[in-house]
Length: 277
Image (cartoon, rainbow, N blue to C red; front, side, top):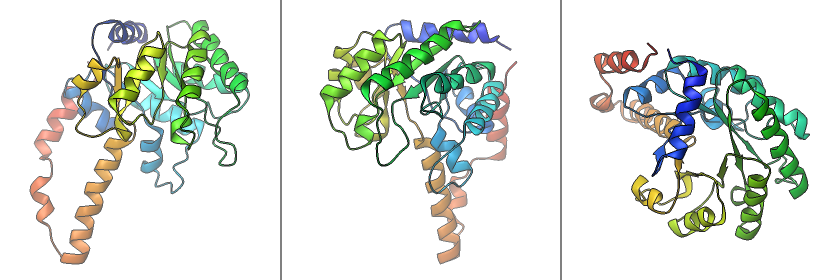
């Protein structure tokens, strides 16, 4: 099995080579191995996927749950893993940065920290505090024995603050604070992607959830994106399929959905192919 240091080198290489790469978001061991078997080069955890697995109607997760999910996914395959650390599960910079150390100890080689507070009355951290939080996370990342690629997220667009200028200002400040990758979830079109990419000098992550589904990875690469993730979308798709099939059983007594299910042999082949050597 690849060492953590080997995974870290591979992860950095993916961010340095020309073009963009897709980093899909599994939520458990099985989905991680399926994605590895299909040839993806890195994985990213999804806190929404974890919350969905627990049936949480508020989509919340704890730091311990995220770290344990990270550990399971890291150990499931040979691939580098980036962890969705939300806001670090704390407000104070030094406390939030602890999540970076815990993710690295669980085997991750990258992770993201966001400037959303989790408080519906005051959703985004004040600018100076947000920058201090990124700076503290970077300091921990740089102190680790294995390189850890730190992603800083500006969450304005997800929380009703449709202020592109402030989003760019925050990303530029996070860049100056040392973030390796920048991320502004909620972009809706290629024009907005280009606007963000042109404003920063670090690899830029685009999540597809708010984009037109007809936009392709090649389109995003042409717009300057380096990394393309899907967040909780695969989890939501799987649950939508489950809900549709279960409604068909309950309301129509139908099992026609069984025509579309994966074969046991196919699943076994993918799970086996995605396992670490």
